[in-house]
Amino acid sequence: MKKHKNIIIFLIKFFVTYFLLVAIYNGYLQKSQKKQGVYNTSSITSLVANQTVTVLSIFNYNVEAIQHDKELSVKLIIEGKYTARVIEGCNSISLIILFIAFIVAFAGSLKVTFLYSIFGSIVIYVINVLRIAFLTVMIYKYPAKVEILHGVVFPAIIYGTVFLLWVIWVNKFSNYKK
Picture (cartoon, helix red, strand yellow):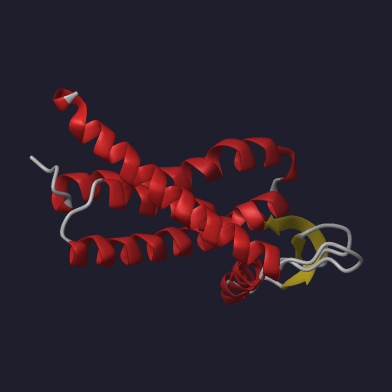
């Protein structure tokens, strides 16, 4: 048992943090999303869609974000064409929760753990908005490639970012660094 103490402590810290943050987020979603009659996505999902519009507008695309009237999503319309949609899973919060749970489980000092969690969450969020903007343009320009873009390329970008942040954390800041 003593041999596996670090693994057990890691798992306990990870799962307690993860389930606590998921419970808080699910409570937020229950209060912020409306499904009956009028669909309304959470404010975070709408914010991600609107920030995607802002990014694409900087590159002179005519883009708008419109609440979908038949589902919990925000439609992204580029140059008058419904191209993509932003759903709750696209807002990066679930991934940020996973990221933070790992950071807490491999904690460094309290201050450094807190600051890196904030820093990493911001990086993940920004990369995600840029990823959605790029995906929207790529789907608009190459609609036949939607499966490979949405299913392979763009998950690799966001998951690769999280993995890189984890590697940096473990090797530079956590109490487990060598």
